[in-house]
Amino acid sequence: MKLLSLAAVAALAATLFLVPFHTPANGRSADEGPLAEAMEGLQGGMRTLGRLVGDPAKHAEAMEPVRAMQGHVLTAFAHPPEAPEGEDAARYALAFRNQLHSVLGELLALEGALFDGDADAAKQRFGNLNGLKKAGHDRFKVD
Ligand code: HEM
Image 1 (spheres, helix red, strand yellow):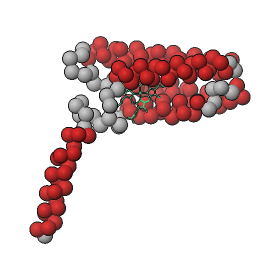
Image 2 (image 1 turned 180 degrees about the vertical axis):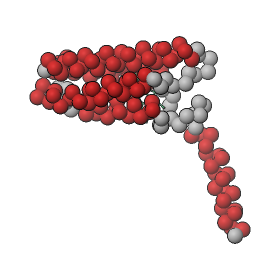
Image 3 (image 1 turned 120 degrees about the vertical axis):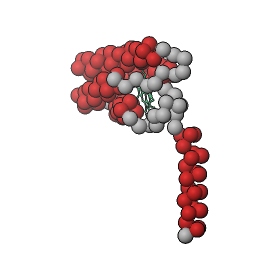
Image 4 (image 1 turned 90 degrees about the horizontal axis):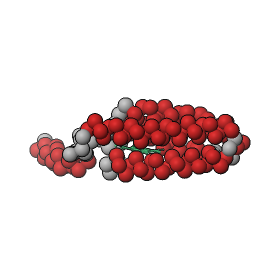
């Protein structure tokens, strides 16, 4: 019995020690919630599109993931991350939505390129999406 309560105390102490290192300052777990889920959706779409955009014969198949990604962007739009200390929250959220607006524009243009069967344009848009992802993460994603 004594051994059991010792183990319980040890487990509690370990939890108290570990939790602060795994919980970001905003109290939100970094890999859950609607924003993280939308981002996972975007990531899945990018993975699928990577093997479809370069081949006009696969452009019909690429339509569905592109449209799904548009939906993920719109979900993310409503879930800006918490602004870092010292930044104006409303301006930060606006900048976040502007960046997503650019992503949505690229996804709509990509859908157009797929309709045209234009593999060069589709690859260009796909590359632009990767650039916007990097810029978005540099500014808004806390590691
Ligand atoms: C095609 C474009 C993008 C892809 C594929 C992508 C992918 C991802 C992935 C895989 C994650 C990790 C999700 C997780 O924690 O499980 C993530 C997180 C995040 N991304 Fe993106 N992303 C993209 C564009 C953007 C843009 C444009 C922004 C900003 C406007 C952005 C902001 C963030 C933020 C703030 C997080 C952290 C979310 C959290 O911890 O709750 N991402 N993204």
